[in-house]
Image (cartoon, rainbow, N blue to C red; front, side, top):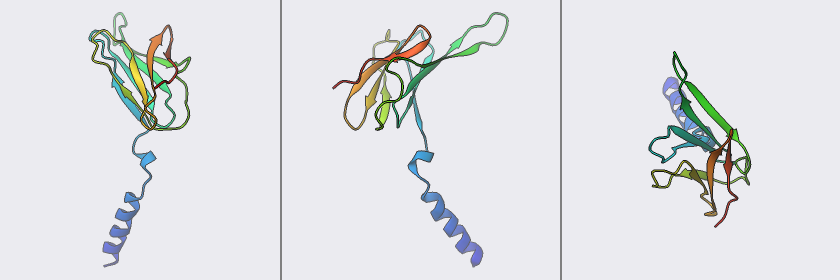
Length: 120
């Protein structure tokens, strides 16, 4: 009987794990059909980065990642997500603040991800 109680207590403890532990990031592919880029947003801070596949001569390719640059760094804490347009030539994605409805477009410029200011 003690083993059964211990299992029940463990089960209840697992249900009490904070939502933050579930997932901190959201990922979205760029809608451009000939681009293999994936964007990442930190759902709490809105920080955006991106990675893509790069060819390497004579071997396995390489993952090229772009760090956050102008406007792509942490924003006011909120609940952020990514939305891709349906435009097949669009290389960027929209960062959306799910609480306020504000949006910005984020894309790779040179060696970093940049985002326009959030607007509604």
